[in-house]
Picture 1 (cartoon, rainbow, N blue to C red):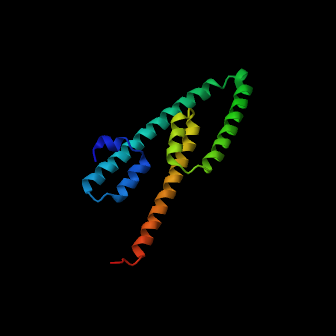
Picture 2: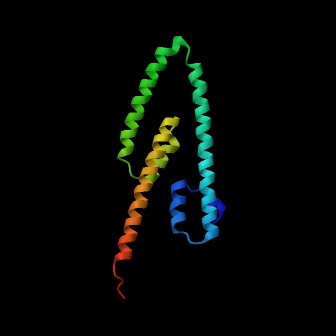
Picture 3: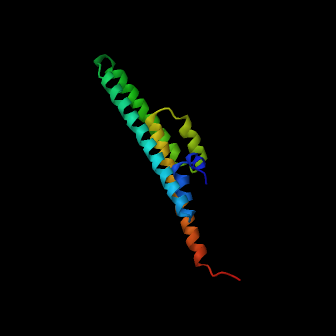
Length: 140
């Protein structure tokens, strides 16, 4: 598989591909793509954190304190509603679409966690199915 095709996949898809790939060179390329994705995500999170720190320093102005407290409470309530919606979602494509449209860092963080949860469930189900199939006597 070409490195460009690997670059188009997300971490969960790459991990699934890694599980089923036997070619060592291909596995090396997949692991490299996973590391690159993790590095990029870490950079984005560091940028978001730096941006949050800058905003926090700006919002320390006492005139804006009450307004920022109200806005923070509203954001927390919105995040709680989003978390409730995400628990019932089990479609990675739908979650990915939601992730792309999310504007806030905390929203994206919740959605990425939901995607990881769904992928873990898919991997667990595939692993169980593989074990069950390997235990069945082959007819032939």
